Image (tube, rainbow, N blue to C red; front, side, top):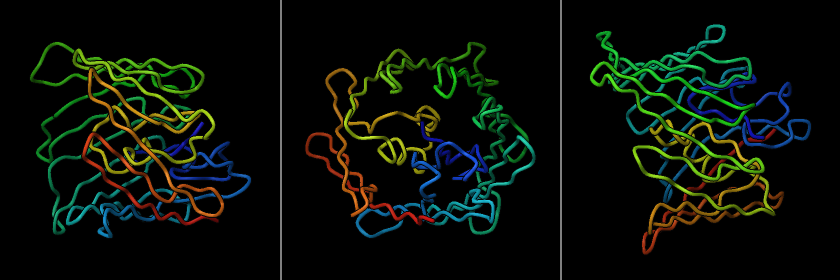
Length: 239
């Protein structure tokens, strides 16, 4: 099972020889690969920097910089724009597996935007409970798994279904892209056995394909939805 966490991280954050798997799902006894950048049509959409412990310290998103600070089992993420705090700050508390147990999002004036609680079965996320000061009713996102892969999740009355390339291990796939570039919490902590092939909700279907280098490592992920196609090129540095 993969242990790559963009928003936060277990096993010394992104990749560690102490983990069973590194950040991209590769057996860490073979190599450790860290995502350095993701580009679309030659334009970087994320640049990632790490410390000596291979923990993510900075993620650059155009003019916005995300800075990561670690203190025991807590992670704080600050957003900066032109050197000044921007938007909101995120605090995570990690469980014994290095996965988020709870999360608080708040503005820099101290006002809380949302609180999230994460429930797991082993490393498989089962439910996210979201509360905020503006709605007394909590929101729930529920996940269903089979054979190490996410089968579906339900949120706000909608259910999304997934299919997989069962002959391909999930060393890097569309979920890995989501972990890096998405602001949605739902897909950031999905670590499957196989590479995801498609996502379906009602009549809408998204399909994903992959290109690999000479060693079989994914270096590009292509998304298609009807006439819309987009390719993310991935640069990873491997030890």
